[in-house]
Image 1 (cartoon, rainbow, N blue to C red):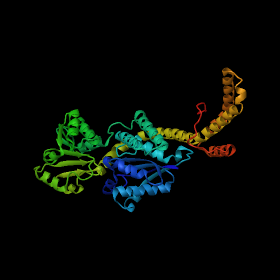
Image 2: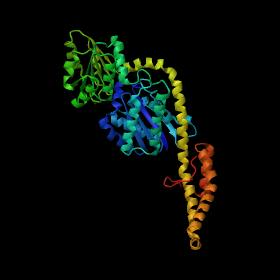
Image 3: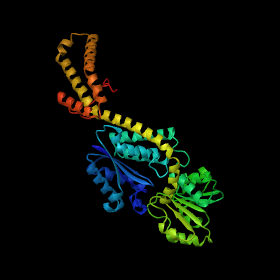
Image 4: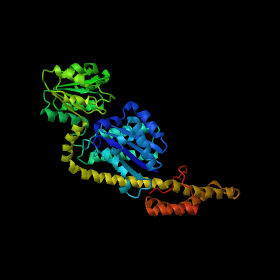
Length: 443
């Protein structure tokens, strides 16, 4: 058994390929169950955002899991595996971890939750996205002990990093970066009119950042009118429907689009019409949606500047270099949490064996009580309680030392030898169904 992470992001493959590998929220349930049903996969979480699609699985065999995930990605994208397989990154960890150096899958998730693997270093949005991906998979019955424990600890890591380091200072989201990029392109946003397309998390974040940047007029267009009104009311913006998109783009200075649409919202011909009505005034469009909202070919229209996630990545890399000094502090936290994760994981691995040992001893103790039942009937309640206490205490003294030594050595070669010897000497089968008595030592 092993934890495996397989993914792609917009930094390691062309956008026109990557956007076909993204999974829309409406398609996530079907995709997740399709993945979870594959033969080598026992648990699964799918994380799909504007700059990454990652699959986290707990699997019987690495190679079998890799094949299942590769085929899954081919199915959802309708691409042959050879179109993207060279761009896949993989993180794997064995079931028997000896040190945090081997916890490659956990290290990657901890880096993701910390925001150090994001387009915008230290971004805050990703921690919420990771949590939503895991909670959805858990609610759908696609996770178990292994992934649940891994993801729970990743949230602790993400919170620690943002509390104890300066990684999340200044620009901390894709939305903020998009507005900052617009300000850089235009020199400033004071007095500008900005149209935000989309009222989801990305759209709302962009609208808030635009208002904070001194934009004189923020407009929010969305497919669902009520959502546009709700966001607009919170920040003092103007709500629009998507039907107003064409006429509104004639009069604004900047358009930032980041919807969850699965097909283009703005075609090349639409923007030709818009630019023809602007009397030579330039228009800046920043498309942070994935898949993209705006036809990429519109970049060749005179007077129109169209920037996408590639341009945003280049802009964000400047901030990454400026805050690189924080990475040492982040890595210290991540490595400490990895050691804690390995410790927790290895202890959990021996707990079924320890539980089986204690259950066997308790069965033997109860068997002796049954064998001497007739003689015990001569005792009063206090005397029977005393015998119970003495036999339980004796059992605890005999098992306490081997239990502690086994748990202390868990995850090491010595621990494996001790576990094998215990199974052999006591003829134990370490079953997950075994229940450990409450007085079994856990430290």
